[in-house]
Length: 127
Image 1 (cartoon, rainbow, N blue to C red):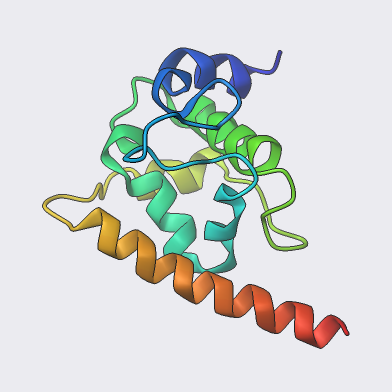
Image 2 (image 1 turned 90 degrees about the horizontal axis):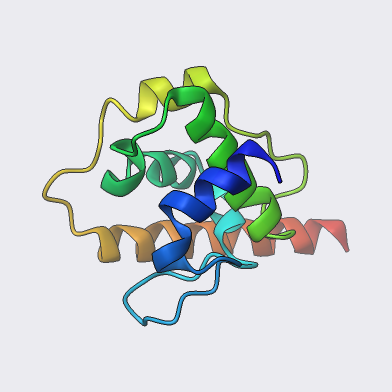
């Protein structure tokens, strides 16, 4: 078990499910979907700036490992081709600016709509 997977199970799996499939409607599904956030820089930042992520009781390197496990293992192919993993340095910078008093559901919807457009454009250019 990787460091990222171990820490995910301990800190995130209770709500998001041990395989990224949550039972609650209010808890976003991760399995096969979360990588879509990496289609835009706003989406990439969003994942780190979420309060439960930014304030996670993990150092930057471990949190980067968790994010990479979530995006690339639980997200299973949903990230854009060639997407780079998070680094401890990137996580360190982004988590210093957590979302506060944001309408996260609306922000998430906007980011995912933009990501879907970009993903579809990428598929069209591949054909």
